[in-house]
Length: 162
Image (cartoon, rainbow, N blue to C red; front, top):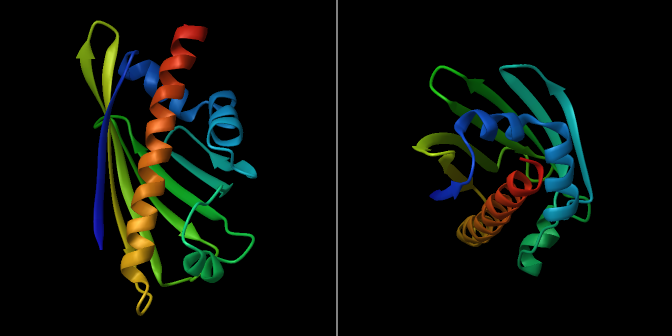
């Protein structure tokens, strides 16, 4: 099991951050263009919850890719606590059911002057004999790349769209 964390500064207020985080247009472009997912769909969304279906671009070792299969996808189920400003989620992959577990949180902390800090924390757990550590370390690398791309994209989006 690994704990993956990251912090990125974003050039907007926490209110704007959450508006973008839940915005359809922003997420369509983030997942399909920036993260190059082959598909992305918001299955369900309310003010306090969201379910996504994502087929991500995956760059993992061949051994791991064989286990995942050609059509790897996942559902993300999350809930938002507006009072605490925290998003809690669980990732449910379509492969290796019951053997992979990813849960996490996203927080947004105000920094003043139209800036905030996104704080991501994720627990990655792979219970696959002989390959669990490789899957966890590969997932950690993929997650960091995605979070970094998302932060750059969000800052670019804010500059372009206000």
